[in-house]
Image (cartoon, rainbow, N blue to C red; front, top):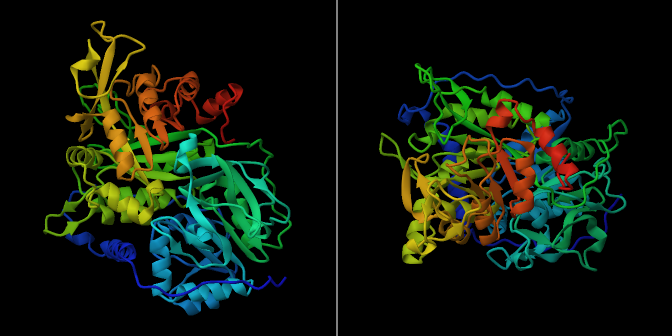
Length: 592
């Protein structure tokens, strides 16, 4: 079917400073692979075997052309395409776009940076030409937004101009948290084609900007999603498709969407079980604390108030399993995200930690939900005097399969400096990474401990009245932030830190509590309510889960968007599916 004529504005523009940063970080992170021998020998020795991929390889002429302009996690899209049996050809020149039989554009990062790269390389014009000819095209996330006339993100910035409309930021003033992160429902229109097998189930979104329906673009819209307002979740005209959500991160449902695009004439696709998705679901996240044991093997461990060693004569590191295998099992069990924390990353050079990067690469081959990684994301100078920026470190994590990175100690130092001076330097890890990859890709992990008070006015930090009094009958506490794996307290409270990092560019907060860690007595409701009420970005509750009822409590008594657990999942005390079944029984929407 021939699509109606398009009207586009594919004009060239000079490479902006943001794109120069992007190009620099991408080339740097690629070249990092060739600098391994120059790293100080701080990484652990470990052997990994990639999980067996059960997909069937396609015939030699089944090739997908992938437009990867060098930002964010495109590895997951590659893995999903290969999992479905297709080979991949990377775009090297504009001619590669024009010759493609099928083109997938998984745009990741900031709108302006992406447009500048496309214009600089002559690919914007080729993209317009390809789409105008109604060739098979699938845009993902930013790959959808770039089709519109312009974006307000760091703008206005001109887009490809193929679809009428302006991409604007979500409005957080109505109580909806921005970024929009998590599993939400679609409202599908007729003739959506690639969405035919969704079965009213959730798909995964992570974005701060969206395009809105209008009379001018209504003929393009194949589905919408409600988050404060109805925004465009997908478009379709002829063979041209684009989605705001991430099919490569939407589990089996997402794979069915990709399969429909890759096999448009297939009639053998088995439809997923019909769901009851109606709104943004609460997320259940499995966390894997990863470190080397005393034998040098990379293992999943779990602390008791951050102490990961067994209380035995050997005093060995607690070993709860292998990270790649456990992550794969949690994906099968229904975890909405998997989070890796490299708990020795604060003292070792993370890019010298080859095993951790391999864990990400192997996990992303068969786990099609979001992956977060944290630990050691900061500026670093190696033993040879080579300086690496936090942006380079994050870039390597993204290229290895991470969807989000989690910053801990470095965020504390940045927040302290910002609160002291009131100046955003643009040089902190938070600011650099969020500027290039978008704030939805940056999580700040807060590790506070309670400091009990008789009187809330005894400190300059925000204190709360406790539900349960302290050991000496104290009715109040403030939450002191720590760094270096909880080893060092800092002169800043969790409330002050959360407010500061939101302003500096964090898109999500992972809220731990040292006092509750490993205790199994429930989340610190006082702390989580304090922070989730103070910020407009999503908050993940962590530390203390010991029963399914604890998840219900944190979702009903606070504004947490997600809840994370580790030990109870690793030890199989409480399965992920049991948590979700209980939440459903209590009327809390979750992905099934």
